[in-house]
Length: 278
Image 1 (cartoon, helix red, strand yellow):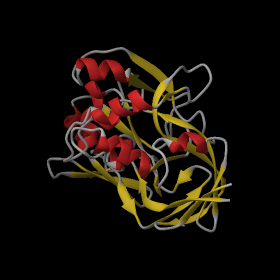
Image 2: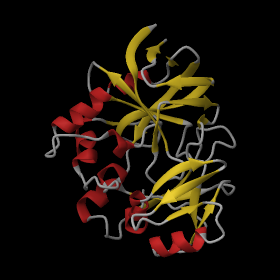
Image 3: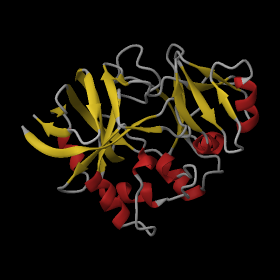
Image 4: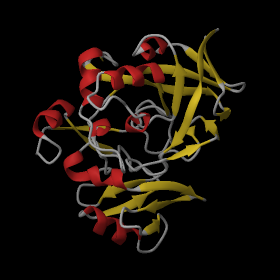
């Protein structure tokens, strides 16, 4: 086995498209990291999942922070107000904050979809512009009952990639939270080296074994404000210039950073655990 590095950060996002929480350790099961993306907001007008991938409608979700709370999630709004997903007034509070009627959901509707604004058009026209959107089905690379993950149960990114993006950014940094990974891997080696992980097995710590599947296509979310973090178009422009690959045959070249993975053997993972490729 080849040692890649160590787990630098573990993160889960209890509500899709909201800020998440850092963990010192976590259980990883077939459906991914425990408590990750187990809730989402449904747009009651369209029936689609609310996602900041369409920033014109939903970028304000990235001003809200969600933490796991028993079988639900507690959401902190930028106003200082908090609401729990199971509260009787949760839909009203969140709808008022977002300016659209939404309701919390813990089970994806059959064939659940979201809108993904074409990222290059968002870069060119801005986050408030009406741009072309793609309707995508979520969870196609995840087991049934895997919550509201975009594709596969886990998303990983390496620090070498983040460092390279930051080096070419006018801001001089690329915060990992912008890319919403579950595992940040402390890596040396080349930028976008995650592309070469695809198709291989990965051991994380002493228990967990993953199969890395495909590079992660990036949407416009990394460019958006995340809580106190400002907008950063370079978070997408750099991968678009340096790492346009076709993650899935027929999809066409996409700006990619990081990889998706499936879980072959579940277990517990801690920050600092060794990461190895088989």
